[in-house]
Image (cartoon, rainbow, N blue to C red; front, side, top):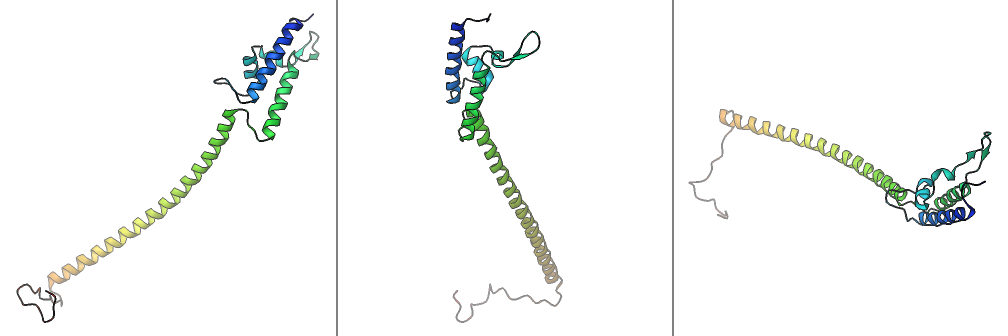
Length: 165
C-alpha cells in the first residue's frame, strides 16, 4: 500500500515538473543551484523521494520520483552540451574563471614590464652617478689648476665684432 495517494503523487509530480521547467529556464531561487536539492525544495517535496530505496529484504527499488530526477539530469546535461547554462551561478563561475585567466596574463605582462623598467632605472642611476663623478673630478681638476686654463667670462669686456648682444 503506497504511503501517499495517487492524487497527491500526481500533484507532486506536476509541481516537480513545473519546478524543473523553471530551474532549467534559469529561474533559480536566491541561494539555490540547478540541482536536485533545489528542485525538491522548489517543488515542496522531500529530496529523498528522488533517490532509490530498499525493500525490507534489502533489494533495491526506485524512489517515487526517481524517474523525474533522472529526467531532470538528462535535460540539464542536454542544455549543457548545447552550450546553454541553466544555472546563472555556473555561468558566472565560467566568466570569472576567464576573467581570472586574463588578469593573471595582465599581471605577468606588468611584472615583465616592471622588471624592464627596474633594470632601466638601475642603468640610468648608474650612468648619472658616473656622470656626477666625472663632473666632480673635472671641478677638482679646475680648482687645483692642473694644466687647465679658465676662459674669460666676458662680463666687463665689450662684445666681439658681429655678436648678437
